[in-house]
Image (cartoon, rainbow, N blue to C red):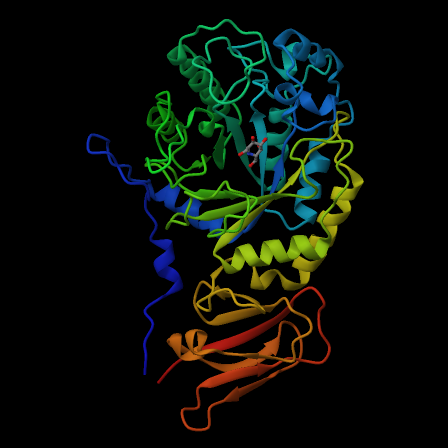
Length: 459
Ligand code: FHN
C-alpha cells in the first residue's frame, strides 16, 4: 500500500518563502501573522476594487499613460470627480452577498492619486475634489462594522510624483523634469503607507503593484533585478512593525521576496502563464491568490462590455480553490460611486451558488487529486471530507487514473454523495477494493456538480 504523506495541516505551517540575500535579515512572521495567513486561506474569496480619478474618463485606470496626458491635464479631472452616490455600506453589502470575505481597494494606483485624506500630499480625494470625503475611511469603518476585512492595493509606481526618477518603463509623457531623487519618493511612499496603517483601524494587508516598472528584463538574467533600489524590505518591515498581522503581497510577477506573506497571480491560476505575467512566478508555499476582471479592464471602462458569465466566474473561483488559491474578483466602480449593475448581478449569482456550495470552498485547501480534465478537488482542513468539483456536465462517471487513485490518501471513502444531495455509487477494484470511479447522478448542476467523499482512516 502506497502512503502519501500530504496532510492539509502541513500547509498551515507556513513561513516566509523568499530566498534571503546573504546580508538580508531573516523574516519571521509573528504568530498573529501566521493566524492571519490561515484566515486568508480559509476566506477564499475577495472583492478587488479599482477606483480612482481615472473613472471620470471611463477608459480604464491606465488612461493617463495611454493617452499621454501631462500631469496638468490629468489633474483637471479631479474637479470632476464627485462620487456623490458612493455608499460604503452598500459596497460592503454587495461584497458580502457575493460570499466575499475581504475587500482589496486601490489606495493609490499608478496615477499617484490618493483615495484618502493624506497629510503628506494634497493630491488626494479629500483635498483636491469637490467630494472632499475620505472614501477609504468610510469604507474601512463600514468593513469593520460588517466584519469584512480590508486590504489596500498600493502602487510603487507613480506617474505623478516629481521625485519618481529615474523613470521606469511607463509614464514618460507626464511632463516631469528629467531629474529627481528616488529616495525622496520612497520616503513619501513610506509616509503614505504609514498613514494607511495607522489611521484606518486593523488592515488585513497591503497588495503592492508596479515594482515591474523598474524591472531589468534581460534574457537569461535574474528577473528580480531592478534599475532602482525599491527599499522594499524597509517598507515591509515598517508595515509589519505597525501591524504585524497585516499580510503583504506584491504583484511583481516574480517569485516572492523575503518579507512577503502571500503570493498573487494576475489573470492566471497558479502555475499557469496565459498572460505572460507569470513566466517567473511559480507557486510557492505562501498562501496564494488569483485575481481577475469581470470584463477586461480593471478600472471603469465605458466600452468594455464583454462580461464573463457567472458560470465562467464560478469556474475560476473553483479552479483557484482546487489549486489552493483564493480568488480576488474585480469591479471598477463608476465616477458616480456606483458599481455597475452588470457586475452586481454577477456577484449576486456567485453568492447564491456559494450559499449552497460554500462548504466545498471556504476553509478548504487544494485537494490531493491534482486538477483533472473533469475539474478539481478541495479538502476540508481536518482531511475528513474530499470534494470533487465536476465542472464538465456531460460526463457520466469520473474514473480515477493511477496518478489520482484514492489510495494516495491515507483516508478511505466510506460514502460519496452529491453535496446536500443523493448518495452516488463508488466503483471499486474487485481485488484491492480500491475505488476506481464515481458514477455521477443523472440530474446535474450545470455549473459544478460537487461530490463529497467522507473519508475515514485506513485500518
Ligand atoms: O498595471 C496594473 C493594472 O492596472 C492592474 O492594477 C493590475 C491588477 O492586477 N495590475 C497591474 C498590472 O500588472
